[in-house]
Image (tube, rainbow, N blue to C red; front, side):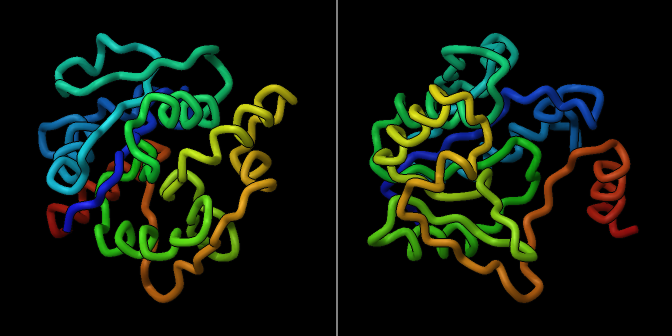
Length: 191
């Protein structure tokens, strides 16, 4: 499947719980962000990386989008990524989700039709960093940033969002701590 859309990988975080840059942590000898990008390449017309240190990600051979103002979290990364995107629809994904379930991405693109964004709910909580955003939400994001509201959910409150229950056994697995990273690696090895 190929989406007439861009993918924006968010890699500008502080990685405070991990203690080091999550995007560059190796899994099977490759940086996590490289694994994510390789999963996305066959399916998206454009891939952007939102990061505050473009030189660290030049090995990906992609356009790196930097925040206009640093320290404002993923909301600023999303805003800057959407501004640089060539597409109306954009898949937003955090750099700490090592395995992209394309059936979930496809579901988001189906669900966004007639809406400004599609966001999964996992155990009743939104997952705004694995979601599809229309460029139209850029205005609401910029307004939230201007008010000092840095939570993605605050920005989306004024948008027409389709919240989709993740349901069943599906889950979005992100790696925030070294323990989670080691557990993931162990599972991959079949242990």
